[in-house]
Image (cartoon, rainbow, N blue to C red; front, side, top):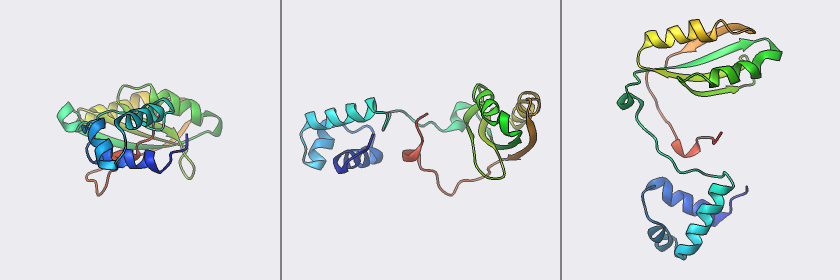
Length: 150
């Protein structure tokens, strides 16, 4: 779905305050409340956006996270990404271009739990050639408005 300037303006208002009412969005953009409601429904139905929430992982008891990059046999990359996506601790899994074939982001309550999942559930998958694990220790920027809808 291709968004026009009105759709983007509505999303920009919601990006700053997702709890704002349709009436307030309409007032801010000098549109009718019905048009705002209609545009939001169209964008949601067209999968251009989805309303949701972002929680701090530490408050959920998830004290560890890791980026896992895998080299795989070419024929197994998609299958491996799909298998990793099925793990409860997986927040993201996808096939990539470049030196690595699969990229995943995993979260757990402790580093030891992450290590166990990587050793037990990922390293043993058929087609895994090499694993590189990066544990982020800080974030310079994270844009929640650009999260891909899967």
